[in-house]
Length: 276
Image (cartoon, rainbow, N blue to C red):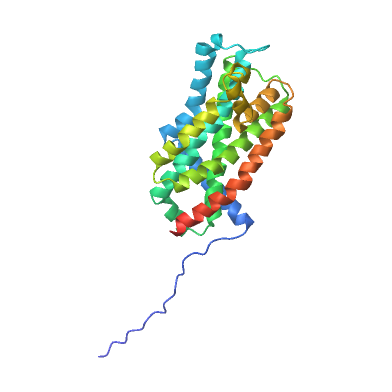
């Protein structure tokens, strides 16, 4: 008796192709942004940077150093909270963007993303969008705590939104700078070490905690023209019901300049890194 074996037709299963087009890119970037935001709750260091650190800054400076720091014609709490918002933007980006992307680059997460049907640009955009979402959460929580301790928004709703908008725009621009560091760093520790000195310089040599006229003349020249000071001054003026003057458009110019320079640089570095 002869047994006849019938071969089944073979079907090839090609690897999924990247989904191109604006709609798919936006969708992929948004999903990655939500993934990164959810990841924060499992990382105590990022949770500290996003939520607890700004609250500690406000309470510490308001009640420990506030009596020694004089603000001409105003309350120190009204001066302080916009500065704390600026610190949220600067130092939160180091933990969430710089260190976070360095970890993803070194632990194989980016290789997993590369195997999925999405464009490389969506990965970076998703990471930067997650920074915007993290900053929104941090600003809301810190603002609520500040109001509980005596801060008041003297401007209207439009002024509050304008102040928050200029802060978020600068944070978005800064995240692309930090992305370049995270992509090229050999480890998360190296990324933190590289970014820490100049972020501390920009963050503390600014109008965040003290009025710049109290600084030595040579230091004040530097502090008055940094994007951190300009952004904080614009937000502070809007939150307190005043006019930001030239600081608003100067901050926007700084943010736009950073985006024009570092978006293509970060994209090129990322493509080289994932292709290596």
